[in-house]
Image (cartoon, rainbow, N blue to C red):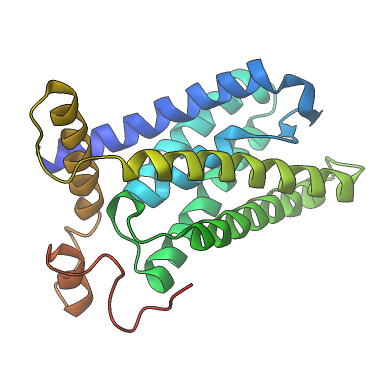
Length: 232
């Protein structure tokens, strides 16, 4: 698959996954809403974090597009400033956590070296950053009165949604075969594995070659990252 097609499908897949998770959240967890856009369980937060962990900057772009679509058409159709701010903040927080995972956890395709404890750390980091960014904006814009209650609810909702999506997808990704099988199903799953590996590796295609980038592309490197990577 060409580099351009990989970028397109990574962005489009993120956008579709986010919209689908938002629809499911509104259908299943409508009763958990604290105020409009703040839920005690918010599954799209898990998609935000998962998509950036899997496909990096392409995931952030997909989230930005999805945020603009949902904010302008659903959440804040009459408040363009709030809509743009929400879309930007919603894609910034997971991307920063993705960069953190690259630096400290030597993140690899399909989340192969992210232990349950590391996933928890990333989920808490994302939930805290996303909630803080949004509520700093709320404070500057003067759009919330119950600041503490809103902050706590958004944090819990983002964390719950992120943990649900991350742990479920981590389990599913672990089932992907590492080589072609003898059935159409196993071959299809293997194709998904290849696509994820290609999309992830594609994030580094434009970076200068060096010891770190070589380790990312070298299939012989172990799943637990470089020797100096911090472990949890």
